[in-house]
Image (cartoon, rainbow, N blue to C red):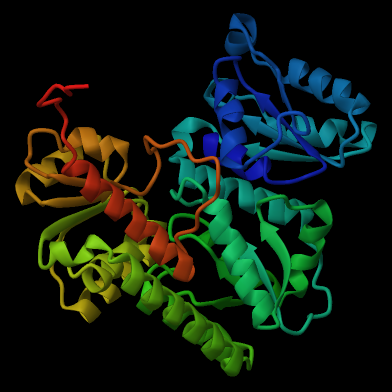
Length: 424
């Protein structure tokens, strides 16, 4: 339900109705911050199911709540179902179909009870429901255009900066973005997705179903599908080169690559990053697939670490294929864990005993007592609350990641005790 709520809250001119007990509705409330929503401009509703509805069903209450929403100035209402009503057999699809003719906005039911799977599964379910209900019907193809999918399925705490970088790069390449599914997405954008020449999936964790639907239903071409996302020097170069070749913009792609690499090199010459102190140090990467897969090459090439453990939070077979290709190309054979959780991560770290861990605040605690002196918190949740968006994609992303490394290295050697008293 949390993943579906994150996806639905990325659509403007709409409201989200949780057919759920009030406690489950906190999952919807928690999705606000991940989509960078303004609380004053986004509406969420809840049927607030109690004991009677959980035991006997809440379809009547759902219909009444939808009809009460007629007073809202919205173009669409996304109805999300929690575990309780799905267990007792509430048919939210039938209820929505029954009341659709009595309201002016479009109703999109999304069956996303928690027992159906993970947060990533919820994103897939929501994208599928949205595309089937809102996508256009095969409009004429618009040259040099793309649709972006699942940028929010990303553990970078400020993934909006990654999305902004992608849009800036595409503009430099002369490529028009018709729709972003989903972040600040207008309903009119859904009507244009069928006209896109290509679709770019900005996540290795979710969005595969939406890409397949667009390809099968409208013939939209999947782009960069076997290339890791643009984190690090090599991956960014490969990603930009592939787009430049596809859209006959090789010269613009080469300019972007030259400008970016020059900026990174010149900055490193002036600021002296501490990556040189980690030569061949055994490392672990514990993250979502979106950031974790390209981080393997970043850790190997930019920092000259030796990845000994790669633990990814999801286990999509297509993402596994991308990771295997990266490991083969780099000549690495680390321990690999898919669908990891805190227990599996702790156990794997205890077996491998890395000196460096790329992960989150959770991995900082999971590494206690295992002798890992450096924990680079690069994926959510992180201790530092970030008010400003900082991308990991592209060339500034390289510097942002190196800055995380630099700060952790400095903090490691900072005195934790006051060893003397000042005389003044």
